[in-house]
Image (cartoon, rainbow, N blue to C red; front, side, top):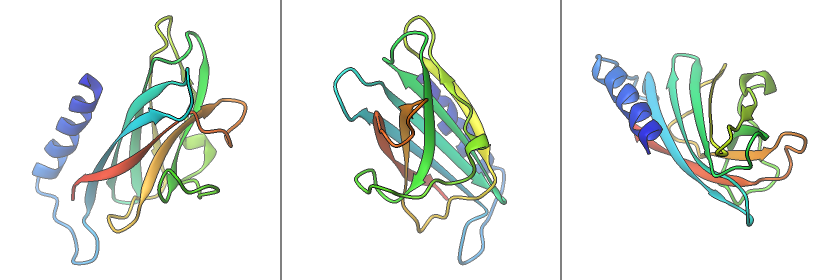
Length: 145
């Protein structure tokens, strides 16, 4: 919850700094998601994203994962229930999330594209060695534009 509040405060602070968008797309958009486990014993988490210019800064907080475990994560297009959806940005934009002894991790990345306010996106946590298997998923909700 704390990381979610920090991200929200940062995004709202940037928006309050005077960013105004065009009639078709705001200059900056802020998003957040709550990731629910898709299977027993899977981690949960929260995610946030701020799109500004041609980049999107993304963050993930993994909670209740297996201790000392490496997870993959991605922003994808469409809703969580959609299979085979496209990944937003390249693989290098998403550093591995490595959990501590309590099974928690925080990781950030920058995607060289922006999230469009009229589109639908979600964030997934996957096993590091199998990006096709979703462990947790959450829809990115637009919180500010």
